[in-house]
View 1: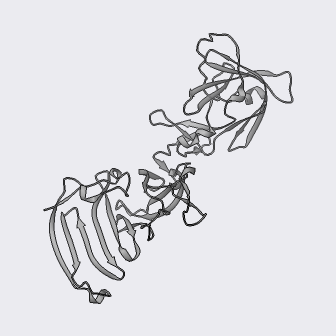
View 2: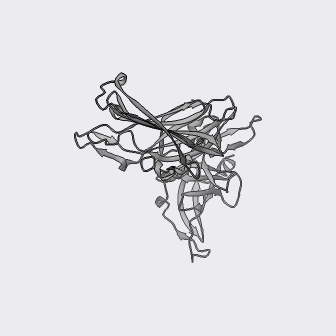
View 3: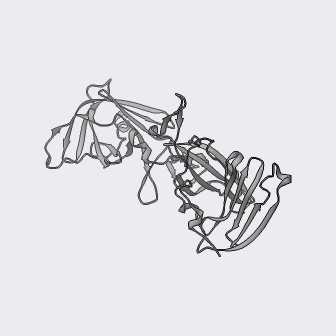
Length: 366
C-alpha cells in the first residue's frame, strides 16, 4: 500500500553533462523547497497552475506531498541524493519504516521556468508535474475540476474560459474594479475587470509626506458571458497608469470605466479643468475606437468641447465666445462641424499606454 502511495510524483531533470551513468553526489538542499502542481494545457503544449493541485515541500530531510481534494498527505525521509547523467535520484524511506527504501527521481522539464517532474523508480505511473513557487508569477491562474462521474481530473484552460472571471486575474495582479454589462448584444452580462500590478518597486514615497504611494499600473481584461463559462476575449496588463499618479499643482485625472449602450467607455475626469473619454465598440474581433469626447472647462464654465464620431467621420466643435461667462447660463456657444479623414479605426489592443496615446496621430481634419 505504501509503495502504491509512493508512486506519485514527476518533476523534470537537471542536465548533468559529461556524468554518463556515474553516481555523482547531489546536494538536494539547492533545489527550491516549495512546489505546486501544474497541468499541461491543450494550447501549444503549455503548462498552467491548478489552484487545487498537489503541493510538494522539502524541509530539511523530509519531503512532504499534500494532495487535494481528498487531503491526502504523506511524507518520506531523504537519505541521500545523487545525479546520474540528467536525472536526480533520491533514496528515501518512510519515517516509521526503516526497511522500505525506494527511489524518487527528479527531472527538469523546463529549468528556466521552474517546471519539473517527480516519479518513483522506473515507473511512469501517477506522474505529478510541479513548478517552483518562486516561478508562479510566470503562469496564469487555472482551476481543475472532477468530471461528473468523478473519474480523474479534467483541466479547464483558464487562458480561455472560466466559470468565474476573477480567475483571469494573474497571481501577480490584484482585482481593482469589476464592471458588468452586455458588450456583444447577446443579452448576457459580460465582465470587464480593471487589474492592478503588484510590483514592489512601484511603491514610492510621497514627496510632501512620509506616506507610501502605490504607483503600480493598471490593466484591463474583457470576458464574454457564454452562459456556463466566461470566455476571455482580450487582456492588456498595464495600459492605464496608477490611480496615485502625481498631478502636479492639481490632482491627476481620474479614470472611470463604464459600459453604456453596449459600448465600452473610458472616462477621464479632471475636476474643474474638464474631462475626456474614449468610446470603444466590440466589432471586427476587437474593440475599436468609434468615438471621442472632450470638454475643456474653467470651473463651471465650458470653454470648448469636441465630439468625434469615427464611424461617420464627423467632428463637432463647440466654443464659448463669452469669455466673461461665470456659469453655464451665460455661455454663448458657437458650433461647427467638419469632416475628418481616418485610414482605419484604432483598436483597443493597439494602445499599450493611454498616457502616451495621441489621438491626433490617427486622424486629420479635412
